[in-house]
Length: 164
Image 1 (cartoon, rainbow, N blue to C red):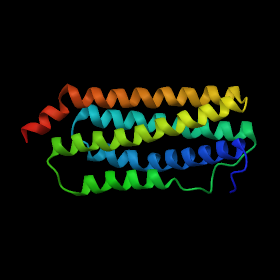
Image 2: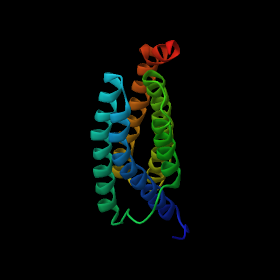
Image 3: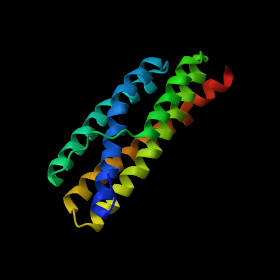
Image 4: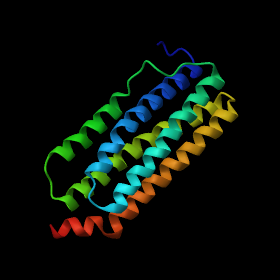
């Protein structure tokens, strides 16, 4: 896809986000299964539901713009998901693995925050105010998830890991 216009760039960003979110729908159940701390497990399960909603929201945006978002692979998310899978397979002590899973999940959230922020700005610049509003809604949800992960880390998971 040639990126000749800002509209082309917006669609490119949306395709990247769609690929990233669909990859996460597959990865989050594995992260939840690998988590030993019940609150972390619940956070991953809750984020899975939220991520499925993000895919639906991106599909709605695609319909609004008359575009198709499939056919592109987000290589960055592919790498982040693989890093999480590698962490799971390394055989760490449960609390240490949980601390590592939080770090892996926060790297994912930070990537998504950057992507949704960029797409929202592009949509806003192009006058797609409804699209920008939907992207802003997802951006705020991603920020909230990142904050919840930080709270889990500081409320005991990392302290437990330091004891192992």
